[in-house]
Image 1 (cartoon, rainbow, N blue to C red):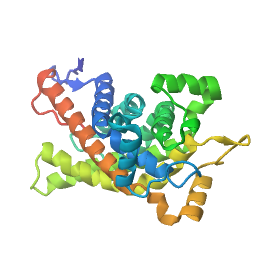
Image 2 (cartoon, helix red, strand yellow):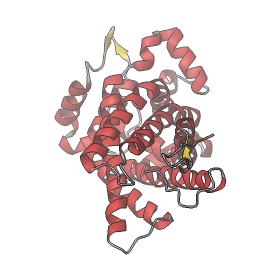
Image 3 (tube, helix red, strand yellow):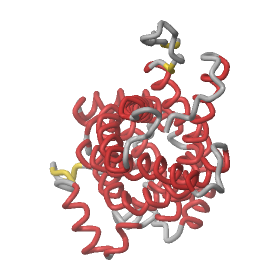
Length: 318
């Protein structure tokens, strides 16, 4: 599973992690983190849909949303859409982190990481490609987590992510799996440029202070900084994506014509700051998810380097 190269002196250079392992570790880290934060993703989606539709349940605060979910759907209800969340990580995060870590390594010269602008560019590239691959799972996730807010007669009632994907194709056509693809890709580009680049940069800057050393605490602090920056930058695009992917046809016409239409209507009907509606659960979800994903990824890379490549100096790769 490792790759080694011969130097000009005939000695084998240190083995490096193979590209396939980079992709596997990226997806596994994202899936592991999702198990912990899925309830927060559910609350975030419910909050973003609140204010839309006349008969659906409205949530004024994150606490109100949680209370409503527990009261109406029970304890199991807070994990609604988990299968879709895991599939999303298996597709989207596997692709984005695999591409990012691969390009990051390629563009690092003599152990020096790329500059911030290059990190952002790598993040945009990885995020856009990953989002396209993960859009079908994203559509299923949005619909499954939004279902409980609707009256029973309007709920779609998907049993799991496979049932959701098959029914969407059968009832609405295969292209519906990529509904909202443009704002999803746009959101992913913003998220990854902010998240991956700010994480790498924060980690590098913290280490340069001399107070931090490569380890769990450094990864935690860098992740929380990254999560806050990413939340503020990506929420408006995320709200547009969420509403487009959950929309229904009304009199044969879609509720929204595109992301700009969503944002315009939200600002006009709900106020400018509604573009950051659900900020608390979004950050509460994105912050820990960022922390857990990067910590899992860094630790897997280090363990692989130590026990498989037999290199005690292997870094986390970001």
